[in-house]
Amino acid sequence: MIADQDQDQSIIKPKAPSSREHILTNFPGMDFICIQEAWHRDYSRSLVNELHKIYPWIIYDVGNSNLYNNYFLFNSGLMFVSKYEILDACFKTYSHSCKQCLFSGKGLLMVKVLLEKTSKGTKVGYIFNTHLQAYQGETPIIQKQLDEVQVWTKEFRAMTSGQGDIVTFDILCGDFNFDNISPGDQCLSEHGLFSMYVDPARKTVGKDQEWTVGTEMRQSCLWEVDVSTPEKFKVSLKNPAKRRRYILDADVEVATLSNLVYNAHPKTGKVNEERDGKRRIDYVLYNKDVNVKVEQYAFVTRLAQVTDHIPVTMTISTL
Image 1 (cartoon, rainbow, N blue to C red):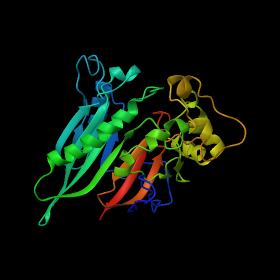
Image 2 (image 1 turned 135 degrees about the vertical axis):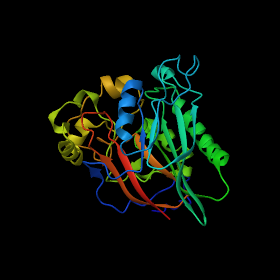
Image 3 (image 1 turned 120 degrees about the vertical axis):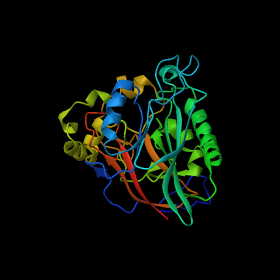
């Protein structure tokens, strides 16, 4: 897929991916995995030991631990898993955070991977993994973090650029903690980052593709039978009335812990299919300046009742 720049707006309007199946019960074959919220070192090591059976290159326990970044408590929670050799990696902690995120040292993990050496040059790829401020309320933290992502991605590519490099993809992904539809998130959806990176799941600011679903679950409904297996969860996501019971709605005015967790009760009555169950806060984006074709963009139910997020996958072919 190649996205075209709309002359009337600074936000890119991509075409829909070619594959029609957007909700999967199993993960497709993956060359790279980006994980957030892997804060517990012992559990992370157990996960890494399993992943190493398939993936030789893994970065985990990432962070800058000091009094000012995280009060010597949690790392960033970011993990990067790869089948391809890692050439360079860098992590930067966000300059601004608030509330519970003061203790977790969130930031941007930047990685350059080696894909192939050819007679024409060295094929490389860039992947950026992040987790932005959660439940920011009225404090405009995410805006500042997105500003830093814009700067740091450019700096890392410039700093690690090698003679003969052929950049085949540049991917930005993670838990952004805002969606494209909610009125309270509109200023974030309009951020300049989205003139650099394409979101295949959006049509334009404030409107997602029809096939999308939300990715942030209602924690009070996490253990119900209809989401207890990957197959049942898929059925629920395809049913708009059931989906809004288990996935938060994209009607958020102010993102607070109270609004999104404690008082996030399911609605009843007529379903609004554009907003209900559509709070999509997990993203996989690609840089518009590096030509790739999106073969499939999917939401995966394999981790039913293991996480309160729905994993997102993107399959691309390079041009």
